[in-house]
Amino acid sequence: MTSLTRNFEILSNIVAAPQKAYQDIQSNYPVLFPLLSIILLNVLMILFLYANIDYEWFVEHMVELQGEDLSKTEKDQTRQALGMMSPGMMGGIGAISVALILPLMFSIQALYFVIVSGITNDGFQFKQWFSFTAWSSIPSLIGTLASFVVVLTASNGQIAPESVNPLTLNELFFGLNPLKGAGSILASTDISIFWILALMTIGYSRWTDKTLAKSFFIVSLPFVFYYGIRFLLL
Image (cartoon, rainbow, N blue to C red; front, side, top):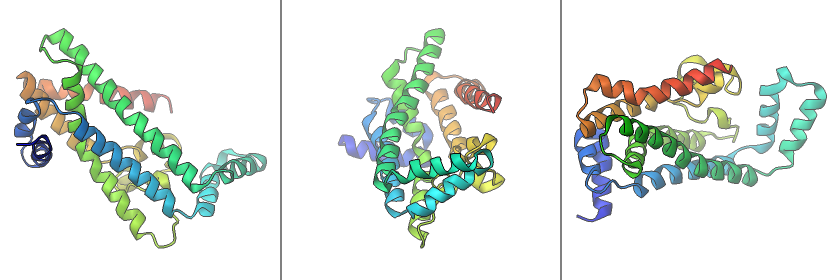
């Protein structure tokens, strides 16, 4: 079996048979396939979004969203600053940011598990945990693919980048201002997070032989810490 075939088998099992998927990951802990898949699709989505957006509308939309806190002079400055940039430039900045942030996020998660491994002596190292976090994040691509659909079906190009993912908690349930307060947190969190947590729990239990309850506590702790800090800073 080629490495590509093995990767696609793991990909299908992430959905259909997570226990088998995490067992197969342990054959050689592949990293590039899940990492590049997630980065590439997110980069393409951002570039696709800004290639199809009504940029004049976007500038006014951003000014309007922040309008409550801005004076007329500040609104004009914001409008001028955004107007100096082209859609391609905005897309390029967004694409580069995603390409840098995603590996950093996986690295931080992997480092957390390395620290836990040092405490529990389970023998897993950084590469193994990086592979674990990357594969476990595959369900996030559902929101990315849904975003492509939103852009494709928008006939007038009036697409709000902060709301392009229709599966975020904010879009599905709350409808808050996605640039402010709790709305910004909810707009950056889609329902795939629950699937990711479930996969991590299953995978961690499979790799370390810990109970599902202990595994859930360990894998959810950094998420609780992250969202707790964000809400405290509101």
